[in-house]
Image (cartoon, rainbow, N blue to C red; front, side, top):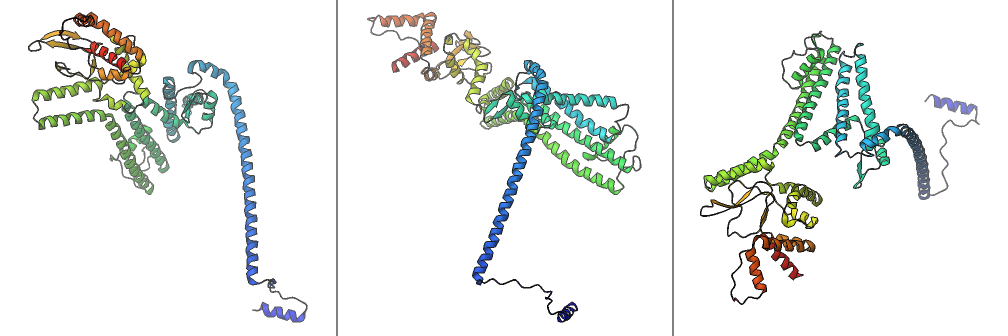
Length: 528
């Protein structure tokens, strides 16, 4: 208010002086609607200009970043090229031992090497943390620690130069086994030595017959390592508070690591029995110990329960199946003799195969793998059978896929006289007796491993459609074996061919397996 009258006084003194107030803008000679439209266009143009400027800056930034990335990649490729040139003699020598590439899933040499890398990784994980916290890095121990550190680094370097760049990988369903591509894949990935530890764990589980043993060891190792870290933290906290200053901290007596590890075991597992914390820092540290201990210990115990439960899954299934069968037999008042034989069969089946039905185990596999397993298990037995010698190998493979493993107890009747033959039996191990007489006390013949008996007319007919040459071979062998083993049947057939005048000839005996095969082949030829 004082400045305003003063300015008017000065204006009276100097009439040509202008007012200090800001002059209002000049009103354009436009209507209000047109003026509003012009303002909107100006604002839109300004925004468009700002947007284009921002896009141009982003484009220039992208180009700059691309050039920098290209420069870094070129420098990296030059460095790797130099490394390849220097290490080429070493790689050429290792090619004769490891090959150009390594299959990480099946190569046992690679799994053995992973165990060595895992050992070096565990050395660093355990001893480096202990050396950081405990007073073990003394002047006298430096040479030993230096030697071990250099050895671990040498293992890491060898793994990074020789083994990891040779690992095959899967890309779009194809296995890449080109050395150049495997190197590029590894060098462009962000792998750490911790990844090697977990890879070793997965590979070891895939090759072990009892993988649950390794899972238990691994889970126990996790628990021990958590206790190790807690022991290190407790010693650091004791140094912060002052060793031996309070009853809660480490007293400084005895072996420092063992004393602190003992405290960690009692604290994390909540065993108790230690001195109560006094200061705020000690109380906070101990509360954190309790919370972490409850979480970690419960998690590891849950994992251990799952591992042990998974290991006993098959045994649990076997027990539950046998118990349910026994309950069923007791409910329906089955004789005790039959119940005992059923229990014996379950026990014998489990001891022999470790499972009750192997077909369920193989159903989920593709046909190629099922065929490979069937060939490895049963092809040798099939080739011992005289009837199938000289047949097409693929026909034998097709028959192998239709085989089903059956175990009989000693004294069980496989087939009885008068039963309708619907299956063929191939004895893989053991023996089968053909008995007769009033009380089946007369043993007529004993069939051993490799012998065949039964009926396969329908199954064989389905298979022989695709193998006409094998059909002729089987028919020829069947006739030859029938002539050798049953001349009476042969004489009857010859009498038929000579058109004997006897109106009612004697009926030939019921044909066995060879007669069945001959009839099958004749029937197929008539159909054709």
